[in-house]
Image (cartoon, rainbow, N blue to C red):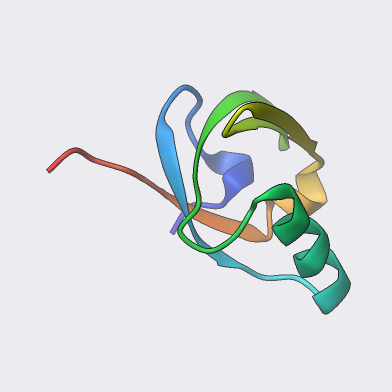
Length: 76
């Protein structure tokens, strides 16, 4: 399962799991990063990422991005 810091850009992604402490998980949830949330990765700069989630763009540093496990959504 790739981490957000390793995910491809301009692809629809789904969050599988978030591995972080309680405080950080609450912060990510308040931004919309929850299990099964859909988003697109706009930029990946050596781990630091910018994600488009709904109508908002969210910047996440490499440390936090490495704790978010994602998978690419494939049309079935």
